Amino acid sequence: MNTRDTGPRGHGRPVVAVLGIGTMGDAMARNIAAAGLELRVWNRSREPAEALAEVGAIVCATPSEACRGAKVVLTILANERIVAETIDQAREGIDRDAVWLQCCTVSPEGSRRLADKAAAMGVAYVEAPLLGTKEPAVAGTLTILAAASDMCAGERVQPVLDAVGTRTVWLDAISQPSSLKLAYNSWVLTTVEGVAEALALAEGLGVDPRQLINVINGSALNSTYVQSKGPKMISDDLDTPSFPLEAAAKDAGLIADAARDAGLKLGIVEVVRDRLQLAVSNGLGRADVAATYRMSRRAPAA
Image (cartoon, rainbow, N blue to C red):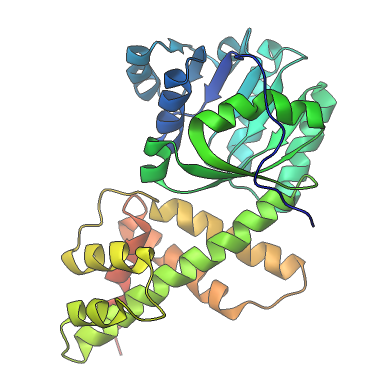
């Protein structure tokens, strides 16, 4: 598998339709507008989309309306099913010379299914899952993992990728970006769960958990992620998500399923999936992924 950090370079200023104005979609849309690209937006609930009128976006009532005249159609929605349903609704408005830029995290097989849908519609497809959460999305510093149905499609979406990120890693084939994203997220989620359980253990054994963060700092195991998530766990500052726990639980399920399909037995990932699903069932889905710490501190009944 070959990767490169600099991919095809785009020319021109395409009209962009953004379908899905959640935390990531809002930030990306604002950066697209700031780059001087004409922007059309749609969201299932209209209010988040209307907030983008302040940056010059045309707010549309339907996916089809949003896509009319757009040369790049960017989907940043919750899951594969919703992406597919939304594109079906948008079909009549999508120009045949448009490129579908698909940024939702889906399974490798799911990305192939969406690529097949694009091919059936006669529309070029670029798979482009994102590495990063709310803060880099707002700052426009996301890393994008990308593969295109053809080189021309990659060139045409590059101005949009440049607007929302600082690094695009182009891979050789559709489904490789989703595979790499799941592998990356498996590390993120196991790290979060590991930090949560280590802090809970320290506290349970009568040690101030802040001391654990202190001793990790400066060690070979230290990371920005530990130093950012750990203090938020300890202070219980977890209700404003940069990565919602329900989205993390969805991704953990995709990771476990993909591993099983590949003939692997990833025990840690399956435990993390179960922990995140338990947290969702306990009403923590809209909190930050680090709210799994709250579950670690709850001792089960004997």
